[in-house]
Length: 102
Image (cartoon, rainbow, N blue to C red; front, top):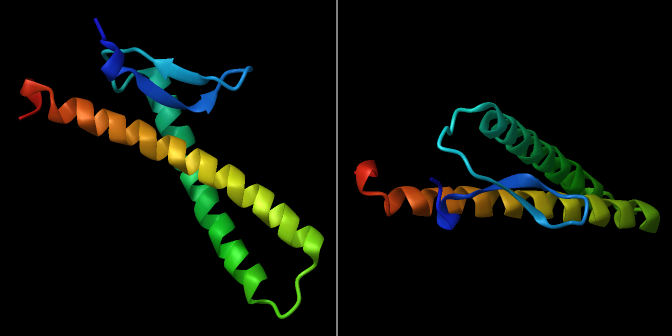
């Protein structure tokens, strides 16, 4: 049975904005693989958005509406990236306290 500190924070939220958690003993199962793929896509989108932001900020003049949209997009990417980091950090912590992981 999975304990509460072994629950995986998934890279999406429920309809009410609350975190979604996965309890599984199979880290290679279909839900775990789906979460891994979505995390990878989110990090890739954040990387592309950072490149776009650097290009926009390097321009001499930038339209305020473009900056507003950029800020909105960066905020979403940062939220997703922090969720991925939190999830991966929790999984690293649970492995380091698991005696079988030595």
